[in-house]
Length: 334
Ligand code: NAP
Ligand code: F7E
Image (cartoon, rainbow, N blue to C red; front, top):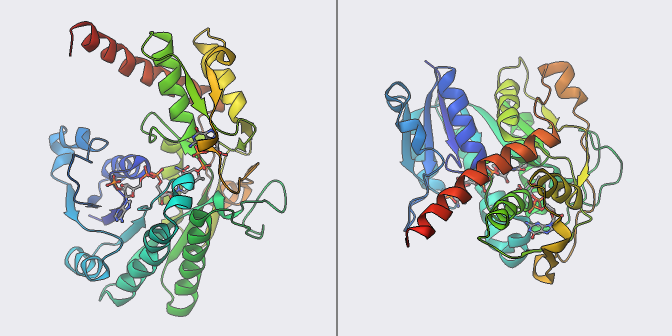
């Protein structure tokens, strides 16, 4: 049985990847941070399945603690390490640049060092990001497009990208970068724009909320479904040679178009509810991203399955269920 270790298992991608690897009969270990409130909500459902529960194991750790990462790796001896942990919010990275660099940049280096020093060779996956293209120098962006990051988050991810490449070349470690464009799901954090919109639109529909405050509506992103993207991570790790791959849908849409899609589905006019709030603007914005995933299609035989419209509806349907539950609780005075 193969052993996988996932950092960031409690996040959106970590939960989908854990589910995917358990279905492939892996033993899955996840690193979680100690938190004063529960942070395992996205993976709790995996424990309900008695078959999967026995193969899913959690261990406390943190990307800022290299000694702890090293001892976890030496204890578990994983075959595959997926580095998904990050301070992943671009706007927040402007408020916490040093922390973001420590976790998203040096944290990756700590983990790579731990992998290098393991007795047994392990494969390594780095969660690289389309944010590295930032002020994109060409359209669409492929593995050959130069980086031009526009945030402390993007800069930290560029650092990790090159450390991953260098560990591959210097130490012959099987290390891959998945350059993933935005991917969303009902498990997306509620402060990212897509989920913020689906949460608010469904609450507005049920009379639980009046307004939705947003930043730049003109930004364009290549949005896919997280469930499709974790398969690409695994496929990269199953190739004969380690390499870097763009994972994207190839389609780009504005925040405004996402609003149209979600509010239109709920038969609401978003212009009546959405207001601009400068707090959500960034000092430097990434205006438009559009990925060219033809390398992944050719070598990994990977293609996205869920379309933009299906994604918007899937997220809206899931949030409508949450809003209905909230309404019932409210009506019962809870
Ligand atoms: P997410 O939902 O924000 O999850 C981030 C995970 O990292 C959480 O499990 C979080 O733990 C953990 N984490 C944060 N700081 C940590 C630390 N100091 N030590 C250990 N764990 C820490 O992010 P995601 O959307 O799943 O993204 C997964 C990875 O892909 C991230 O590296 C992100 O930067 C990258 N990425 C995401 C996208 C996207 O569109 N989603 C695109 C490209 C790349 P808690 O639950 O305790 O907070
Ligand atoms: O913003 C605009 C905002 O925060 C998308 C992370 O997973 O994907 C994500 O980063 C766009 C930006 O995602 C609001 O200015 C407008 O242009 O949902 P987001 P992101 O910054 O693209 C990449 C690939 C990652 O790697 C990251 O980890 O939407 N926008 N109004 C807003 N964004 C937010 N969050 N909130 C607003 O109110």
